[in-house]
Amino acid sequence: MNGEQVTLADSADSVSALVGAVGAAGVFTLLIVIVWQVAATWRARMLAAREQQYKDLAAKYAQLLEDTVELQRRTVEEQRQTLDELTQTRLAVSSMEKMMREIE
Image (cartoon, rainbow, N blue to C red; front, side, top):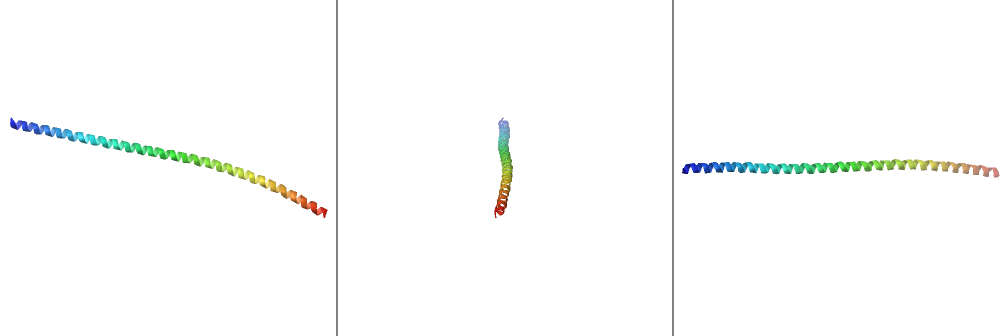
């Protein structure tokens, strides 16, 4: 009897050790999966934030491009207006020179 009790005790210890090892492996596996998922979520958020920054940058670039085109249009219009005024001034000066030559 005494020998059987030792065998049963050894068997129970082996089973309990095996259950403990499987339980510990399960807990470690669960922790690894949780850490992995947290890291994946964090990475996805960082990529989404970077994508949003790229979109914002593209929108700013588009706005600046529109502003630049508008400024160039205004500059061309002002240059035409200045050229017209200069042409009128030259005609007036030529007319005055002609008139002064006739007076002499």
